[in-house]
Image (cartoon, rainbow, N blue to C red; front, side, top):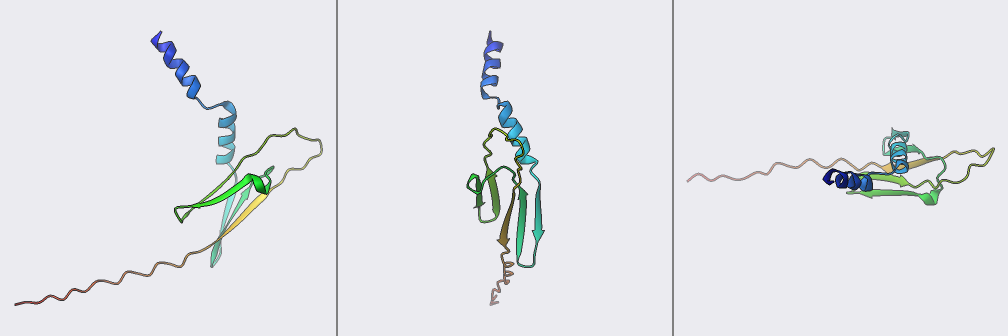
Amino acid sequence: MLDAADDSDKSVSAPTRTYVRDAKAMAATPADVKEYPNSYAFIIDMPGLKSGDIKVQVEDDNVLVISGERKREEEKEGAKYDGVLTVTVEKLPPPEPKKPKTIEVKIA
């Protein structure tokens, strides 16, 4: 009986098949990164998403997070799906090197 209770807990907390499918799709989303002299450009394929369905955030001042939720609609015959998101981020100037601290030593 104890084993049966453990199995039921696993099935409740296990991710759904849809969640696993969508997570794999997002992990495999093609993305290109181009470096320019003063910026970086991130080009991400996001077909079927409207601009309002995409969220672009910067976390911790140096982590770019791009996410979106695709709502499944009935496919229409002859419909064409295409979508590419381009995000351009300016480069930060390199930090100035720290100057060594000089301490005067007096010998008595």
